[in-house]
Structures are given as C-alpha cells and as structure tokens.
Image (tube, rainbow, N blue to C red; front, side):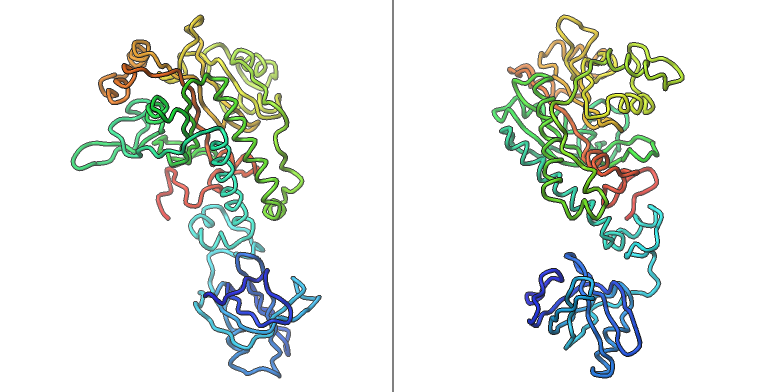
Length: 434
C-alpha cells in the first residue's frame, strides 16, 4: 500500500488513503463515526447518512470491531474529533472482516486475565499499553547494543544446541540431534569465554537461553533473553563498570526516546536515569544488612544464598541499584575465580534491582589446573568439557563478564507484575503455544 498515509500524518485539505483496524463505530442516527486505528494512533471517519451512498455508509458503519479497512477521503479540520481532524470518505474497503465475538477487548475498556491475553497475543498487542511495552523493550535492546559498542565490544552469536550444559547436566532441555543426545543451551558462558581468549577480546551477545527449571513464578521463564558480556584483561570490577554503563544507557534511552510510551503506561513521571555509581556491598555486608532489617524468620549465615524474601528486604533497605560482591566460592559456578588470598571467597558478583537480581557475573578462572580442580570439586567430569578446557592450555588471558536478564530489565524498569508481560510469546511449564 504505497499510497497509504498513517493516521497521525494526514494533512488537512488533502485526500488521503488510510488503512487500519475498526476501533469503534458510533452511530448517532443521521450521522455516524468510524474510529480507525493504526500504529500511529486513531483517526475519525465521518458518515453523513443522508448525503452519502448507502453502500458506502454500510461498508463503514457495518464493519465489526477489529476488522481491517482501507478508507480514502478528504481530510477536514474538526476540533471536536479526538485528533482535531476527520476524514470524509469517498471509498471504504473492508479488507478483512473480524469475528464480532472477540476473545478480549483491544480497546482496554474491559480487562482480561494474563492467560487470555497471552493466548490471543495478536489482539492483546493492539492495546496501546501492551504495544508500548514492546516498543520500550526494542529501545532497551537498541541502547544496550550501542552501549556495548561504545565499550569496544564485538557482537557474537554462540550455539544454542550443545553437547553438554554450562553447569553440567541438570536443568537442561534434552533433544535428539541426528541420533545423538544434545541439549538446548543454558547460557553462552563457555563459548563467550573462548572468544574472549581470542583476538576479539571484548564481546557481547543478546540471545535466547533455556532453563528446564520447574518453577511457576511471576519472575522466571524457561526461555529468556540473556544479555552477555565477556572481556579479556578485565577483572570483576571492570565487568561491573560495564554492567552499570549498560543498564544506565538503557534507562537513559527510554527516558529520552520513549516519552509517548511512558505516558501511555502512566510512567512519564516515574522512570528516572540511575544517578551516580551503584553501591557495591560485599556478600558479608549484604547478609548483615538483611539480618538487621528483622524481616526474615531466621538469620542468614555465611554460605546461605539470598532467598526472594532476603532480596526484597535488602532491596528496600538499599533503595536503588546495587552490587553484591565477593560471594562464597561454594555457591558460585566452577568457572568463577576465587580470590588468591581468600580461596573461600569468589570474585563473583550480582547486580540487584531493589525488586530482584538482574545480573550474575565475575572474574573467570583462566588458569588450566585450578579450572580442572573446580570441575572436580563440583562433581563434573572435565572430559565432557574438553572443547572448553583445552583452550586454557594455550594462553587464556584473565577475563571477566556477566549475564543480564533482558526481560527482568524491562520488567523492573516498567514495574510489571509478571515477567510474561515483557515477552511476546513466553515459555514456561504450562505454556508451549502460541
């Protein structure tokens, strides 16, 4: 439709052809209005029944809501119209008639449960609020890519079908690969480390990851978008600097470029670019602060992971983005390097939003012998990871990186109650279709 004009771009005094969906029909007797909606907004089409051909009036006013129509007519000024202009139609074509019985109301006047929305995602995304989330998500990913490039990173793509998992054989989706067992990858972790040890040095990837965890919560998915960074000659603090820059860049881009979408979501006064450096608490400091809140039934001790309740208590106490550093070695993966002078303390870190964890990262173990020892300590067979470990025999530089949950970044930014609202077609224990 090369002659099509968008609703927000019509010009008074000119004949325009617009195409979109029937948002609403208002029949006032001798006059009727069709409200046409496209991706730029809404446009009023006026039908004066006594002065127009009956077939033209019937085509425009008889179309059911959400039918696809094309209208050609003169654009006139009309202060009482929703956008100050209206089209007086010369032709109306119903391109695709919609079933009058809609499974949800795209106008948003009638709320729908999230399962109904996800089962009818195409209709759901005709709502301005749902559409705004994904326009913002797209801006977040654009800004994240640009931020990585500004730190001299090269974008890479790693395999999603692998012979063994990043952290072993648990929580993996098995598949049959030409008669052999294979798995959907949990993380690009091992591959991005190998590339950091190549001539590329600093790399990032934005892609899907798969976790076969049997959870059913509003903050977990079985297929998620991971935003990953790995940099040679970096330590944990360097990686934290990059994570901070990437998250801040995402917020800055949304505040600057998504004003209409934020207003649609009622967040135009709520979203602010993070101010200054994110606090960096050691794990020991974090559990002390959690215990001091008095919100947990039992006090945390060294070696405990942070439960959802503990994260919430600490987030309320800190009140902004913050890092937790120097985690106990025993609760971090084998590839996280320990401090040379404190072997029980790792260089692992997490970046936390007050609501939940967003990032997990750290400096990696780049020395061959300690890496093999780490496999064995966690009950993993190094031989199964030979493609990875062998490269550490040929000069692997010190390196560090992180993985950032894309959906969690959008969810926390927009204050969404359920992470599935930030995914077009989410995958969880109950949902494999659509």
